[in-house]
Figure 1 (cartoon, rainbow, N blue to C red):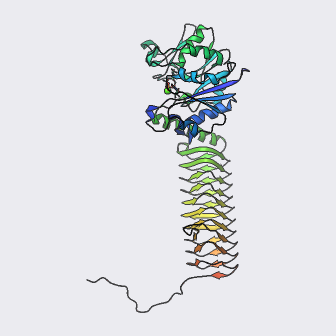
Figure 2 (tube, helix red, strand yellow):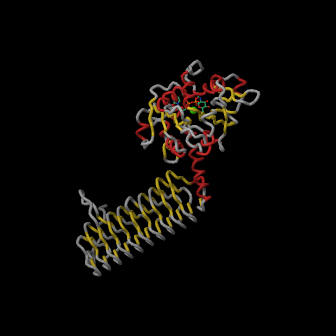
Figure 3 (cartoon, helix red, strand yellow):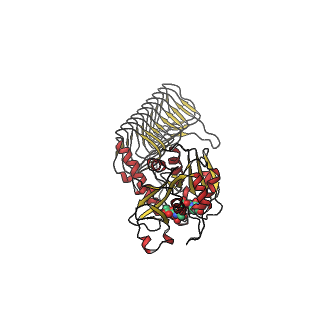
Length: 456
Ligand code: UD1
Ligand code: CA
């Protein structure tokens, strides 16, 4: 690596008209994050002295959408071409530095590819090129009889022979900032698009005796840009496949890599099984030996070792203790904090509640704003009535309590340890430990009673 500092310029001012969107193109998500934030993160991994982002179309939406403490924002008021865009960033750059130009709509370039490109970036001009079977639309790399690069010709300015060249410009390049400043000042827009082309600096570099060194990415997908929603979907699948491969290499079983979606940062231990159509969002941690069934959506949560999550469960901002059994059709909402070996069954919703070890809530219940002890059994159809129309109140249930089916717990209320609530009870007052509370109407038989019938 050259010893000169690295300055990164990310071009993100273009409109992306083919996206047909209100949202600026570079803010469309890939793997749950804006396209340009992938580029920014890769840039950060190169430890640059500064990162300058050139924005324009979509106005302040772009800087506002990104966490930007370490970014310098430069507005390109009119999009007059890639050369014009880089020229806007020049005042922010250190003349001694190597400048790496990246595109905000090319999200998946690897750190290694860029590090290689920048290696001689202060003496030579590093140019990332790729051979494409279908080079249409790209700038073509023109070489002389010694195979040295002489210039880049844009598709719209190319003659038939030049269009046959299938080595294309990715747009990504690295060069000394001082030299770049000089060349950009000489650009003109005498071309088919009436734009200031960054690519015209290649011929200027050659004329100045600067060596143009090409390098290539390991995979073509690293340099694919997004211009349409179809290309976005293609790269999304590629990115998801890569993430699935990385997990499998670390000892995770992915039942079908084409049916896993990770939209965030996950930390998944060995011998986890991810069944089909699992979606993981945000920060998700999954411990050893966990099974996640088909159709589960898990967001910003921690799932401890040995947990089994049956199909179609939705878990958000929750914590599931080890060896617990969840689902099918369970919903854990923010603040659900389950200790070890809990059971949460079908059509159970838990929000903002602590559930102690070994407790079971197996069927059709709502538990909100509650503290539930250990080994508690919550019968089918139990509801914590936590909301009085204005305020939320807590329900507290002690260890080993037994809550009969179809109980309503009208909060604030406490059920003591070891207490039993008879089925169908509406609990409106605290229940002492080890006692039975029941509010059921005593059953009677009304002999000879007849159901009403319709008049003919
Ligand atoms: C550019 C290259 C072409 C290359 C291709 C790779 C030029 C002249 N051509 O063509 O050789 O093969 O990329 O994808 O450089 N942008 C701005 N401001 C502008 C214009 C563009 O910020 O005024 C940004 C866009 O948002 C985009 C990038 O620069 O991120 C590339 O612009 P685009 O118009 O897509 O360039 P191409 O015509 O595809
Ligand atoms: Ca493009």
